[in-house]
Amino acid sequence: MNDPWTSFLEWLQTLIVPEWDSVIAMLPLLLILGVVGPILSLVVLMNLWYLWHRRRGRVRVAEVEPVPAPIGADGEPLFPPNVPFCQEHAVLYPPSARECEIDRTELTVRCPVDSTTRPASQQLCRACGTRYVLGASRGPLVVRRTGRPPEGGAAVA
Ligand SMILES: [Zn+2]
Ligand SMILES: [Zn+2]
Image (cartoon, rainbow, N blue to C red):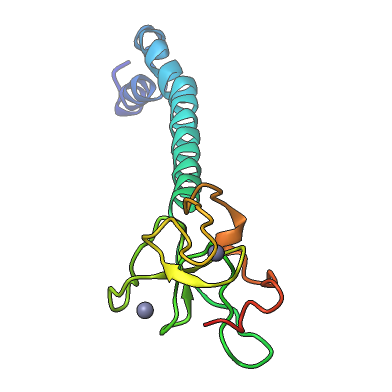
């Protein structure tokens, strides 16, 4: 009975046929790895995706960057009213800016009523007495590149 072939087959059987008791005991673990694992990683990925997009969106809203002033028909840069600008570098700045980022000189702003210019830190126009606070109307006016400035805006410099 104990020929080598038979004992080899018996030995092989212990390798192939699994021990079902231990497999059943491991079922909860397999369930966790196979079902809960992918769901968890999916949730984590979705959270990362959401955070990534929310952060990018927040940055876009919070940081309004300086933009180059549009060039008028006469080749001179145009500065719309109520937008702080640096005349020397022809750059339009967000309403909260007070000095040029290039050379730290004080920015200028144009009066929307009479088109005279004044330092950006002053809230009162000395020519017409109009008082306005920069940044009160935060928005597309600052970053609009294609917007046309008012007529005669470039005449006073
Ligand atoms: Zn400048
Ligand atoms: Zn004025």
